[in-house]
Length: 216
Image 1 (cartoon, rainbow, N blue to C red):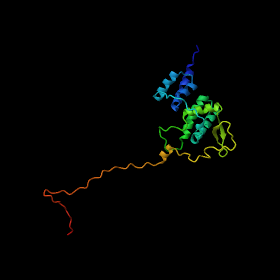
Image 2: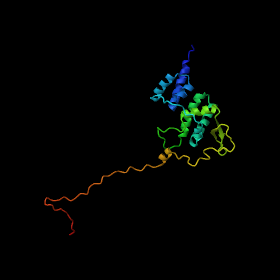
Image 3: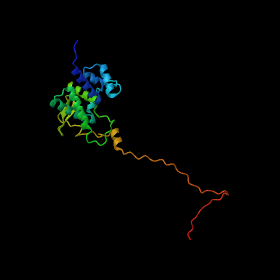
Image 4: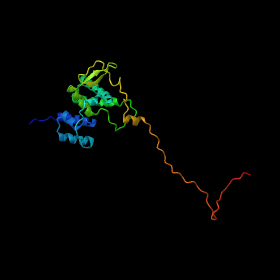
């Protein structure tokens, strides 16, 4: 029976904890670590305070081709390439550090970022993006105008390629979330109950008493 290294297990637990904090699904943790399903599920409950979500992972290459996801995925993959080439991190740790830098850069300069606002590129989709590159389904094409590298379908012609930033679609940025942020909230109209007009008090005899100031 092979004896597992305690230090190696501690490293995997730390890596899994970091991935869980960034929003990794349980399937991602199983692929990146050698920990058992029960230990990963228990670790997920300790970190997140809830049970891990169930269901299949998002498996769509076309999602990365849409306008905003393409920009964010291209930013993340460029950061990941730099981390993998210029740091001693392994692939899993480079993924974690690159995603942290992506979150920092994607929220930089934004005035209103809600604490519960989800990033455009989730950690699970970032992990799937690397799998798509490793399997040869995606490539990084260079834009002719800005010379930046952007995610594109594999074997697409690179001649005449223009990125989504240099040539945005007509309805770029017109999402429900952006409309909700840009529309100023109208002040709540205060409902004032109409007060009944005060009628002059009537005397016992039925006559109305009126006081008139007559100038002398």
